[in-house]
Amino acid sequence: MTKVTELVADVVTPLAEARGDELVDVEYVKEKKQYYLRIYVDRRPGGIDIEEIANLSELVSEKLDELDPDPFPEPYILELSSPGLERPIKNEKDWERAKGSYIHVSLYQKIDGEKTYEGTLKDLNQNQIVLEVKIKTRRKEITIPRKVIASSRFAVEF
Image (cartoon, rainbow, N blue to C red; front, side, top):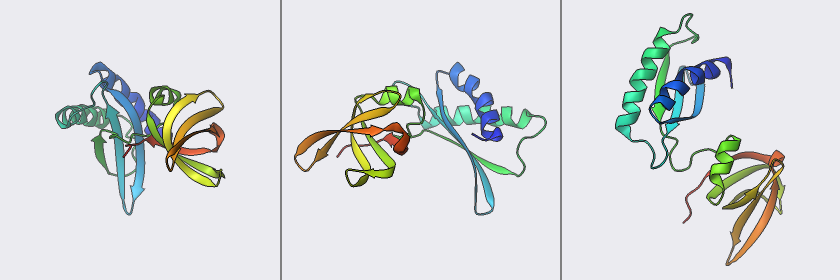
């Protein structure tokens, strides 16, 4: 995380937790000529609805406006949203939550000729995950070293 995203996380986390919400991620990015501050929040169980997001957005906006000195070098657009059904798996808490769930994993290097897999997360430890994947009509467990995982997220199984 950058200094800006860390600062925003420090501001948003207590606001979210006081409402029973969870801060999932913070992004501060420049797209074309515009900066965006994207904050993703969720609520367990059942998720967070648009009205709750709007209320939290107002609280967050007020708190960010109070920061002195202003940590944002340029004007930005604040976007607060749910991470959605395909939320990213970024930390150990997310990995534990994903156990038994259907996930998508992208790899830095091929394993068994593939750089992406979707399947059920069966097990994990500090060094690897075990994913049950479906290949045609058969199910197979593959072990993936965590150091080769580029990104991962929950997925919707069809």
